[in-house]
Image (cartoon, rainbow, N blue to C red):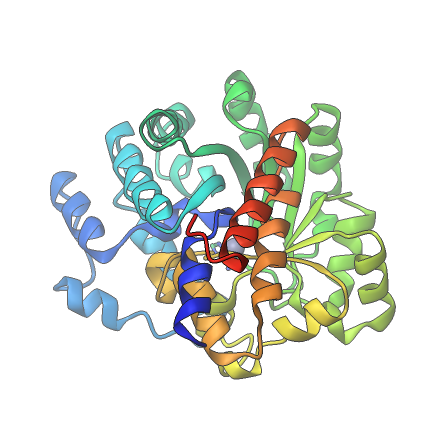
Length: 344
Ligand code: ADE
Ligand code: ZN
């Protein structure tokens, strides 16, 4: 990648639509919070913890990720974690962010739902004022837990309905098909919530199809295995279902062996509505711009692809239409200014 393209990819306005806030907990903050809350960690030092970040698959990561999240206890802890992420996001020229959070990871330890959501929401409101970043929260149900547990979580969430815009589905994909949560998602749909789900990360393309048909999701998180099914790929392209692709995550969790093997160019070539995202940046080696740079370094991607990915990030966001159009115009103006040599 040449310097000019690197500069453009870093500076272009963008939205992030797939970030687990618990996955932004850096080892230093894990240690600081463990000390603050007098929680014993299984690792002796920040370096020892970081050394454990060698994953063989999704489950090997989730085990470490849930252990890391166990240091989050107070509203201030959730605030500090979210504020740290938003500072990194704004440095990467992220203008809009839709943040996943996993309440069951915390309520199962006795942390009240409102402690979790108040801390994350307060940081988001402060970042809106401080940096002009807009955002929303997406409550994710853990798919390795039961439907009853998801319903109980929804019940706890409803008094805070004004603080989240949608629901998602994450955690161990294998053997936990989307249809396990058909009734929960139907209820969320009735409540007017946006719907997304992880599917086709490790799980088969059939899970992408059932996330669409049974859960009726509006966006697919990952979805990279869709290319194994040409009819499904054609449908995703025809319906312009957004796929929130996370390149560094896919390498770290061995969905692909090397970045050079990533199917991102093929997804774009198939006409899919792809966005780039960081997933769990503290665990996978980088934030949003790191993902863009790693992908653009290793893959045959062009200036036109950068423009398309920036546009897609706003096109796929849960934004009001006038605001979406305003962001798309700002993306286009940014690229026009680059083409004419006028710095934006
Ligand atoms: N939770 C956090 N990161 C995840 C991922 N990449 N897939 C499924 N669940 C997750
Ligand atoms: Zn994810």
